Image (tube, rainbow, N blue to C red):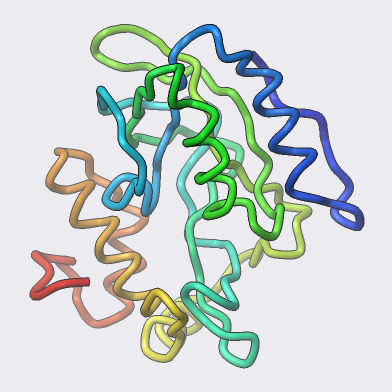
Amino acid sequence: MSALPEFSFARRESQPMLDEALHRWGGSDDLWIFGYGSLIWRPDFDFCERRTARVFGWHRALKMWSTINRGTPQNPGLVFGMLSGGSCQGMVFRIPRHHGHDVMKKLWQREMANAVYDPRWLPCRTGQGTVQALAFTLSRQSPNHTGELAPEDYRRIFSEAKGIYGSTHDYARATFDELKRLGIRDRALQRLLSYAGQPDAGARQGPV
């Protein structure tokens, strides 16, 4: 499997992208999903297996504007995207093939409501071998890509941005804490969280 066809940002629609992803998967094998952000700690779907995994050629980045889930149009927040370059450690989930179609539709409602991500089938290396998993990547040409942000930008967003699912800061901390629990160290995310005045990004207190 390879990247799905490119869609113009001016005419993106979620359903054709789902149809193409389902076609590429085919439905004859179990479905694998790669999570690198909130999917790690809140997948919202049933799975029969999960493994820690690494993807090469992409990295986790808190550089995607969020005006609903973790911010508002007046005060945008941030969510993770996977940008090209480097590598990314996360989690792969295996869904039995007879549940794959329903899980994909549910996942599309969560991740692709605005058709912002570029879904790709990527090789994910695990301790039990390499699997091809669906991952949601972000183009630097996307209008939702923030570009480079200064430390003061992150500090302000962590302090102020909040959407229907909570704050950007809580979202980033929950991801960091789960990665840490899994034995995955993300130094870039640790540095960003230090801008909120918590240099060790230690254990989170209370629910997210």
